[in-house]
Image (cartoon, helix red, strand yellow):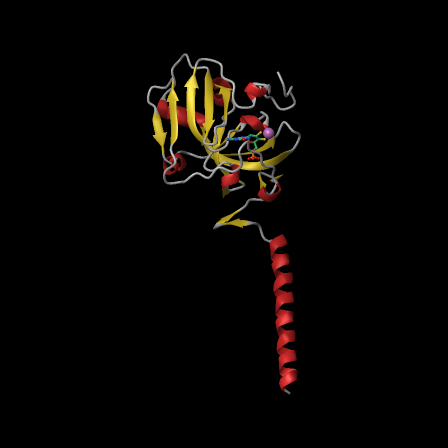
Length: 223
Ligand SMILES: Nc1nc2c(c(=O)[nH]1)N[C@H]1C(S)=C(S)[C@@H](COP(=O)(O)O)O[C@H]1N2
Ligand SMILES: [Mo]
């Protein structure tokens, strides 16, 4: 009787483990991923998005971890009023969303929904001098890249703080990644801390190592 009881309990435990494992697998495939209390979007404007877990990731020095509370975005150079914005201040500006592909020059890419603030919105805060031509994006890991001011304004380019409706994960550039539409991935600066406006040419990390400064997707990778 005692032995039977132990067997029955053992069997019940095994059944419970199997049921939990099976239901866990089912829910993992059926439910959208949840990051903290945020639910990842799987589709936007009828376009299927690549799940964050299947997206590529690239960085010269691995993941950089930035503290939300002490973070500041410095914008200066050829501006009327330089600013140092907190993360919460950045979130207060009107937001915009776009579905776009990030294409690394190495041949991989993915489709995501990007949400953030347009660079133009930030430049309306600082004012931009008339002779400005170039914008340099500096990152916390020592990375940098640049864009023509006209490219950024004409294409409503944003710095994104969300990907697929989820706060940009640390390995993806929290708090900000530049969404450089139609440009190769190395033009999409992550962990951006400083935006500087100038009137001289500039070559960033990969650009000084021979990669095209224009970096149009489909165009030449090298100059
Ligand atoms: N700060 C920083 N930004 C960066 C890089 C980097 O090494 N450091 N790599 C670039 C390259 S080569 C690519 S392809 C994209 C990849 O973006 P992801 O990791 O969000 O997919 O980030 C770009 N931005
Ligand atoms: Mo890349």
